[in-house]
Length: 399
Image 1 (cartoon, rainbow, N blue to C red):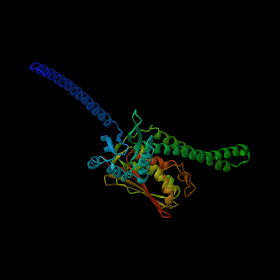
Image 2: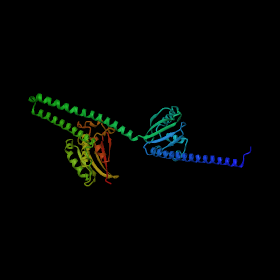
Image 3: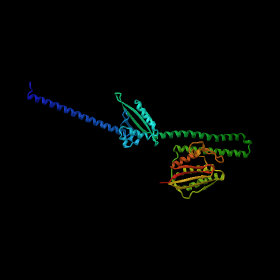
């Protein structure tokens, strides 16, 4: 039985309706997919924003090591050129970073290990040739289906942390050395004091006035040196705990230098040592007067200590290269290079006996170094055995 026109029209209308329904459904699905796509785009944008706002760099690679995603922080940390960034394979990037590392073989070996042990989390440190130390952490990515999809790397610059760790280790070492030196330097004078006072108390009635005077002088000198040690120790401890404030003022240092020389001249005269002042009458710079006097006292006292009788010590100062440079030069016994290398640290060599068996506290030069550091200056030593030593320090001129 043939379909009539009416049947064909009805059929056509049904097909049109089905097409219309399909078109509407397709439009709804397209709209839904576009919405989902926009949501994913926004999520990815915010994810990248969050990742780029951290101090850490992130890198995502597939199971073959090809880059999927990396943040700008990663690019900045590793100083990656744009042409290397554009290389999706990641081979150029590995080569670029490898040549930045202090130990390229170790860097490559770690990557190979991770490729062979895909289920392991890894944490190591990568040292660069410029001294930067990078902490590298990586974790595998497995889906709910158990499939390995790649690995996420996190990079963190730990250079400052490592520097502070070294400083803490050094501070602990300095503290131990300080306690050791202090105990050693205190034990000897106290043993002398105990021995002398015991001898004096047991034999005072049998001793002549001259003998008592000699013992009393020895007791005084030992007590004076022990008190100097105590003063230097307290001064150093105050400096380390920031209790001593740095207060620079514009000052004519020629006046200060002359004053310190006058104070120390009687000690130099005792060894027939000549103190020569070559500083001009007007020489101004910014100094903390208290610290500057302490530096000069220590340097000139040390020069007297290590200069033989009838020797000479010369003090000079001048402006040079935007600095004021002060020099204390003697023609004494000189210092060995291995001792110079340890002069400004906690070391027993700091308390060497002088040419007349003078003793020191071992803290004077460290105090000088700390005080000069407060002025943002430098201190250095030149010496020739048997011919003398020149200790110089600089203080930046006011800008």
